[in-house]
Length: 346
Image (tube, rainbow, N blue to C red; front, side, top):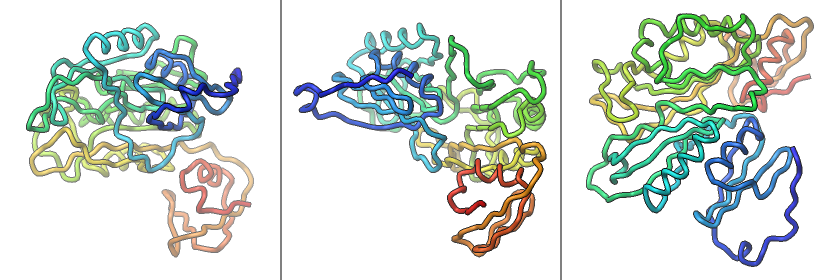
């Protein structure tokens, strides 16, 4: 990526009070392309591992840092409130012209106000709400559900990795048109919430597993509940396609049964805009990997705590403070997990 240097900010820029926030991104080039379309400006700073956008209206500074996904994020969504519907139409037009999917809602009641808005998702799944406020109301409303599904981008330049994305709004494929062991990454966005999920989700996971390369990453996002959902869901707005809400543990069990390993929950957060009697609705993001093929050789690993010992998916015990010898394939899986910092490998 070309490096652009800005020597000194102008006095007006330096003196301005602005809201600044930063996002980790897995592919900086793709993310810069998305935010250029969303914000309508070029990046003010651009390096191989970092880019920054700065706007006066709205007064924000957005920084993008190239990194692997960060565990424990509490971000629900990010919003841009514009002056009127005409301004919304212009931003939506700009995104769609650049090849990004959007979803519009007119006059929806959400978060104690009536709004017109549209949704778009960046390449790392950050959900953006662009809206205008019509009036405040005295009840929460239930028209928007920001955590159920995301809208993936269309990259005209072609992705570097072979990635397959399935969303809640799409039908389950009868077969996947990919070679076995060919996919670098799979993203299931609300797939286990669809009308077909109750009967066919395990079959979809089995098919996906065959098509993924050894070591490839799986990401699942959707809605779950703490207890079995009463009856068939009947949600308004964007959540209307949700016809299956599993309990929190069910997607994890399905992944393990399909053969995935290194399963971990990146986010499990209560959903504010939707309610159901007797259960607590939550959004969940889960990551997992298809195991690597057998690698010859062994390496030594020490678990550094804080527990007396831990046990992995295959029953391997890691006692605290002791080096144990493991196959290299197991160590490779460990180095790709978010818990790597808890181990010493030699």
